[in-house]
Image (cartoon, rainbow, N blue to C red; front, side, top):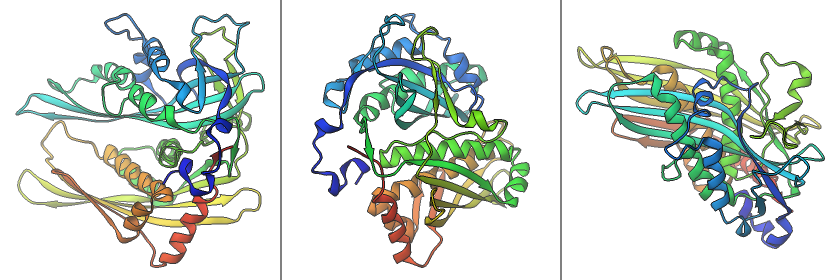
Length: 410
């Protein structure tokens, strides 16, 4: 059950939830004060066979959606002048890219590329400089391309990840089939949520050094990821995550909007609202254990744990605090030049864990399975996820307390 389909909301008329004025599509852009996105930055300059760039392809996608059947009326006014502006604007904001793997298969002479793209689809009031609805969006790329790994192919891969409406996990497909169905509204009941902090215990710094990672960068990666995972799995709007490192206090309180037209009135800075509920992620760290099974192959076990808390920001009351354990077992061939890196495995296991934690808010089956322990198996690896608690009543009650206050259209 999702936030949009809670029983107590069934009496609300869909007409009351609509944004009653048209929304101007402002295009996609990179949030420059977020994470480095070198490949996506190059992808923004690429043109396809029809001489279209990313924003032009997305515009066609947006126009093709029947927004009249959703909770928003979108007017894609790409040729508007600055004096002709609707009250509301919509932008697609990219905040982080993750190039997670280039795995080569010599027998097939092909490379499997694994990538992620994290961002938001945001509707905002242009005149009032106010965020109306901000939903997380995440592109996933897992595809094999002929030939050996080629780092130069990554910009084209990100272009494909955004624009190919026929590819599973692409931004264009998500906009068409998923994001367009989210409960966009002028007004929401329930509470406003935000990932307010990502803490790292001392073991994280040690583990990051062994894995050739930056603990500080990883914290922000998890901050953006957790924000999007929460919104995706609950289908609820969320306040954007504010990167903590290198930003001063004033910058943290605002988010810069850069529409495709540099002179557009859509360009502005939006103050980030104060959340009612703060989400904190506490990283305990991770560890790799190796067991040689032959002269060429090692069996490897990656273990990690983290804690997630939800806290009322007005009085500091904690309404959810649960720890979760995760383990992934796989094989490594040390002599193989092209294999999935360990830092990528750390990110992916955290992603899988956080996804299940937030999916359990509105999905009772996942919640029960996570308490008992979930096993996920493929041909190449086995993953185990479990809540670290014996108190099932408190575990369920805390999840229910979050479900009851999720945002809903009014």
